[in-house]
Amino acid sequence: MARKKPDSAPALSMGALSKGALSKERIVAAALAQIDRDGLAAFSLRDVARTLGVYPTALYWHVPGRNALLAAVVEHALRDIWRPRGRLTWQAWLRTLFHRYRAAVRRHPNIAPLIGAQLVSNAGIGPELVERILAVLAEAGFAGDRLVDAYNAVVAAKVGFVTMELAAVPDEDRARWAAAMRARLGDVDPVRLPVLARNLKRLGNRAFILRWENGTTVPLDRSFKLYVEAFIAGLERVRART
Amino acid sequence: MARKKPDSAPALSMGALSKGALSKERIVAAALAQIDRDGLAAFSLRDVARTLGVYPTALYWHVPGRNALLAAVVEHALRDIWRPRGRLTWQAWLRTLFHRYRAAVRRHPNIAPLIGAQLVSNAGIGPELVERILAVLAEAGFAGDRLVDAYNAVVAAKVGFVTMELAAVPDEDRARWAAAMRARLGDVDPVRLPVLARNLKRLGNRAFILRWENGTTVPLDRSFKLYVEAFIAGLERVRART
DNA sequence: ACCTGAACACCGTTCAAGT
DNA sequence: ACCTGAACACCGTTCAAGT
Image 1 (tube, rainbow over the protein chains, first blue to last red):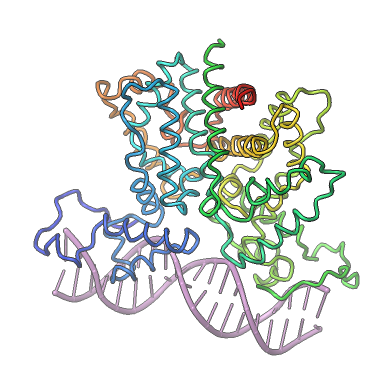
Image 2: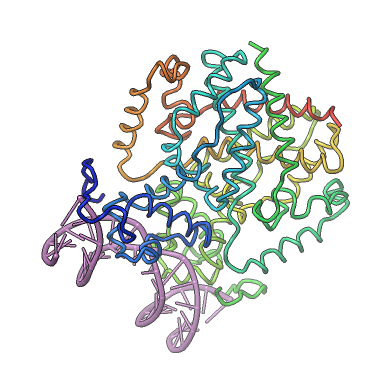
């Protein structure tokens, strides 16, 4: 841990608007830009410091460490993913939430692994969105423990598809790896794996486990839509049961 | 890249059964054990080498590198998650697939982030499972592009919840962080966030975004069940539409 | 208050050399 | 065929010192 940063107002003596002034916002912006450009695997504090023209250790005055910075990056990228209710049905509101979330992550696809797989990133989500989801589900008829369960199901469904769709591609020898995947598909035995063999052309590079590019270059729009419609229709069904 | 390993049979001169003999299997087993014990963030090739009593560079004869080793670890942990069809309906078979998958990952919870978030890990899944899912969905009435979409929806749903449930907890100052999360919950304003405030006790540490432990210590069994039932019921519904 | 500068204890990966 | 051993180019983070 770095020394604790006091909560007092920032010093004005140095000119907060001067181009050289470091701040948490500038660090987060630089970090996000670096991740967008080079990917998450290549991310390093030292690189961020280099682009900002400061010593690596200078960052520690504004940010507690690497993980906290990544959490802040996620928070920054996911501002404003929800809209006020308006006159939408609960189903329609959930639908727009799912699609807006996916659109937001697709603007910074390389951060996707951070969201689903790291508990820290949750810290930045903000309770207003939680309230909206809970309110909508309560109106749909969920209450008590079932409300908690429906909420967890919604959040998991929202994040799940997008995380997989934008899963990190191995940075090393991409071409080699793509060729190996293609070869695997070519070797499919139509006797042992008939349905797979029959649909190979449709599935190749467009289905999980059978692709060599991720959603950045090959988006799965149609599949996402079916996924969302199925999940919402399913919620409608289960809310009726005990 | 390391020098290319020839495909010829392993040398018998050294005694393949001797305890000291290195092999890909022993390396994968040691790596998995280390991840189970210390978590993914602490994983290092050098540590694996230390526990095996060899120089770090010795690993490179058997494994191309760090990422490839992690992919092999995932493959090893996820063997045998599916069962033959038997007399189950397609809905029942999907249900058991989801629950068996979750059970398999829960045996090695720290690998969860690798599965959903890394495209490499897909390489080890095996096309038999793909075929089974496709066959079941074809029987349910999906065909053509809709078959691809339903398949993607199933795989994303299967992996999504579990990845989130077992999201990595920050290793540094866990107690501090848990306290901060508790404090956030205590500060919820019942006027601005009424539904959240009303259900605080139920949601605290048991709902995504509002918890400070992951599924290793606080499993979300009931929520997972609702999630699976909703998704399968939803698939039933959407298959009827065009 | 905010940053420099040196230092520590690590990494993954390469390459040549041994046996 | 399989491993040692040295070396390279990195990391995140600490601490004391400057201004």
